[in-house]
Image (cartoon, rainbow, N blue to C red; front, side, top):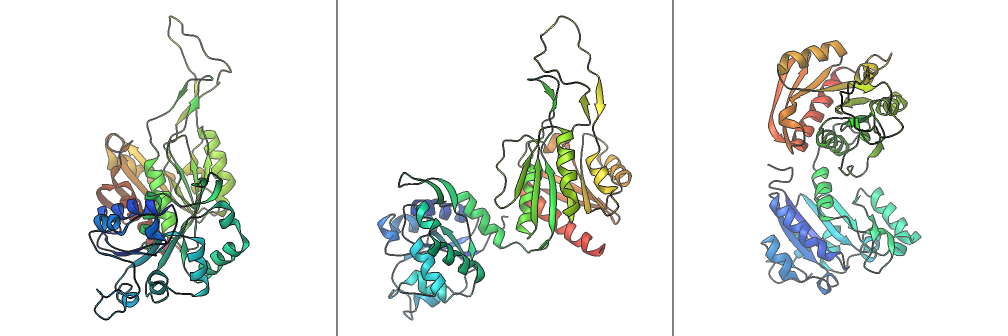
Length: 397
């Protein structure tokens, strides 16, 4: 089950070339189990047809304020009632101005004014139109009114120019819709997270590392952000894109990760050490590529600093959460690690079942005992973990 399974979403399209992305937004929402109703402005119909959105949503598309198919001829009321969220994608500069001023001269703008549910808008316009002071004033007004603004992003635009104003991609918009339904369990908290592997250089091209993909750490970062936290993600080398709205700090080695964490931990309320940090590093990294020889090569290894242990040992530590990836004796090793590190919560999994996979199974260890989380997509587990953190940390205040 997804976070939007069974939700009723009204998707509105205003005019703009980015309207073509609304087709994919519709498909993804339906695929995730949402019921999607589509309303299009007259201008939107110039870019994509209602037939396209009707085929993808499985429901009639509405375009007319005076829609006779609505029994009481009050389409703006009937369509907005019972919705869990209204999402406008794309939202043109003109439509943002209408919303900011409370103007309503067509079905889409009128139902937004008559709504009883959250409203999310995904701006899409030329870079100069987005940067215009009038548009920025309107965006500020909408935020102050509690309307969520999704994006925009920076990139190539249909007009040939490059810059801010590009509508988010469909997958990003659906992620933001999912986020709006999450309880804000960590609202106002600052969360510092490590993710991914570390790479310990042997020479300029070789090194010691591991197969961690970073997927679990990035899922935890997204779940914490969706729970209302201000998130900083210290990431080892991965191919993943950071969740929107978080600060990402890229590092390579365990020493770099340690330094990045220690520079930021004083401001953190919660520290979650998800990264698979290398336990050892070569004493000396050669400044040139070592040539292959015929005999054995001996490396002298030094222990890397204990990031989680160092954070937990601070005079006033944040609420600390550790991760353990084991290959055997999971319960015994994980619980022993939690007690040795003196952290209130540790999440454990079998490395051979987790590294690189899109799903996982976690067992949480705390002072109350063992809590098993059934195998699920990593974002679902991350949300359960964040909820557990919120409960435990509240008790320790």
